[in-house]
Length: 442
Ligand code: PLP
Figure 1 (tube, protein in one colour):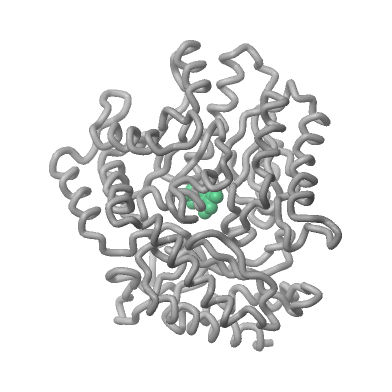
Figure 2 (cartoon, protein in one colour):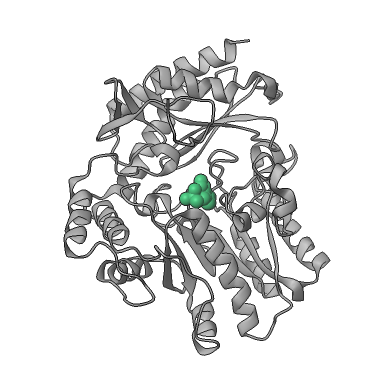
C-alpha cells in the first residue's frame, strides 16, 4: 500500500536503499549495476563523498537564500566554472532545478530577446521530430516525441518540426553521410522561409539525440549547416544538452566535438549528477546585453533557482570530473564499452545499429537486421528488455517509438564515468541475456 503517485500508477517499484559506486542496492538487498545513470544522470555513481561533503558544508553554512534578495557563493563559482569552459560567447548562466525548466527559460529568453531588440514579430520556434525537451508545456510543445505529446496537444503552443539527423533510417543508399546531413539541415532553411524569417525566433535541437532516438550523433557538417542557416535568417540557435552535455560524450559540452556554438545552451542531469536537482541555461553575451541594456529584467523566475546546496553539489561534481580526469575516462571507457558491445552484438540478428559518443550509447533493436524491419510495437520489446535487465540486476534505459513515436525499439546506455572493465563485462553479459529473452518472447 502506498500513497505515492508513482510514475506508473500500476507498477510497483523496488525501494532504493543505498548506493555504492556504480551500484544501487534495494531494500531487499538486491544489487543493480546502474548502466544508464537512471536517465543519464548519475555520472559519478552513487557515493562520491566529495560531493556529499560539499553539499553538507553548504547546508551548515546556509541551506537556502532567495535569489530575489541574495546571490550566493556556490552559484557565483559554478557560473564562473561553466562560462570559463563554455563554447562560443556563452557568458551568463541562469540556474534552475532541472532540464525542462532550463528549456522553458531558453525559449522565453529567445522570445524576450527579440522583444528587447525591436523585432516583436519573431515568436515561432522550430525544432525536430523525434526529440525530447522536457515535460512542462513549453518544452513538450517544442519536443517532437509524438506519444508524449498526443493527449496534451490542445494545450501546446504551435511549433514546427523538421526531420532529425538520423542516418540509420533517413540516409538514402546513394547518399553520403555529409550529403544526407546537408539535406536534412536544409529542411530548416525551407521551414524558416515558409514561415517568413521575420517571424521565427529560434531553432532548438539536441546535438546528440538522447531518449527518443537512442544516442544519435549528428553527421559531419550537419550542425555547421544548421548554424549557418540560423545566422542567415537571424534565428537563435538553442542546443539542448540536458542529456548529452556535461561530459557524457567525452566533452564537457557535446557540441565542442562538432566545433559549433549555440546562442543558448541547456544542461541539467550530469550537471549535478543526481546529488541535487539542478539545471542551467547558458546565454550568449548578445542576448544577455540586450536584456540588460533593454528592460534590465528577464521576466521569469522560480523559487528554487540558484539553490545554494544544489549549486554547491554541482560545483563539486564538476571539480571531481576535472580532478579525476573523467572526460578522458569517458572517451577510453566509452571505446571499450562500444567494442565489447560490437563484439557481442555486432552480428546479432536483432541488433540493427550500435551508435553514440563516449559513454552515451544506443542500440537499435530490429526484427530483421538486413531489412531493418522493426518489431511489431504490440510486442513491447523495449519494455521486456527493461524488465529482463532489472531481473538480472542491471539498469538500462530502453524506449519504444524510435522511428516515428510508435514503431521501433532501442536501448540507451549511459553508465557512470567511473566504470571499469569488469563493469563493462557485466553490462554486456546481463544486457545480452535481457535482449535475447525479450526478442524471443511472444
Ligand atoms: N531535454 C532533454 C534532452 C532531456 O533528455 C530531458 C530529460 O530526459 C529534458 C530536457 C527534461 O529534463 P527534466 O526531466 O530534468 O525536466
